[in-house]
Image (tube, rainbow, N blue to C red; front, side, top):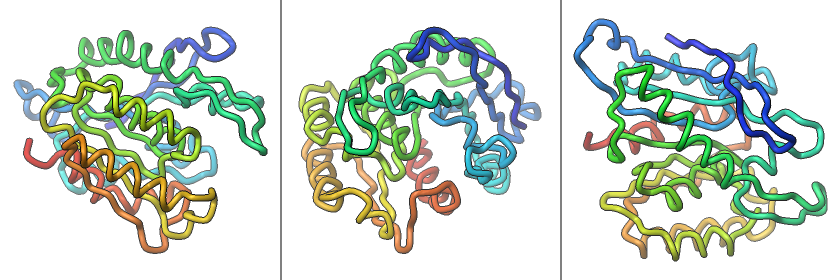
Length: 254
């Protein structure tokens, strides 16, 4: 079951209402004493419904989790759809300049503060979650994938596992490396990270940046699953096909 409602998010241009989405597993009502891990996600409008998705195709998350009977709650929030790169600012912890987008300011830290201090507590109050670090995950794709990596590094006391599909490492490889170097990683931190083979050429040096981050994560004893997806592209249809790998990494051993 997926429900959605409006929440007030501290957007780049001030507070604004967005949709929040909540998926409850099929066994939620049948097992009223059971509590569940939670996956928090970015770009919530693209996760569950084709009719809400930016390009008319969602991840198919509900169908996958229902079909596999995965005992997982998913809580997701819509991104900023502003015309002036607001989503980029909201989903980057590092300011950057790009020939296409110009100067992009960084509101990623403010975004995560809202997730951690307002959204997560509300989900924990509303639903039967397992609110501890071990059972709290975060995930996203593209800029949302960058944010998932940042979150599991900077907020590792909250999130123990992250799924980053096609993360926008090109934004600031140095910034992410510095965050990882200074982060206090708790035990058994898990990261799933992938990149599509057909999107490697979208940004220069992506192959080496992906490999370098993998090496740094392994040096920090992160339990890493890393894949270059054969034929993978930068779109929801491709990310949907990676759900078996990403969800398995998040749920393994619980």
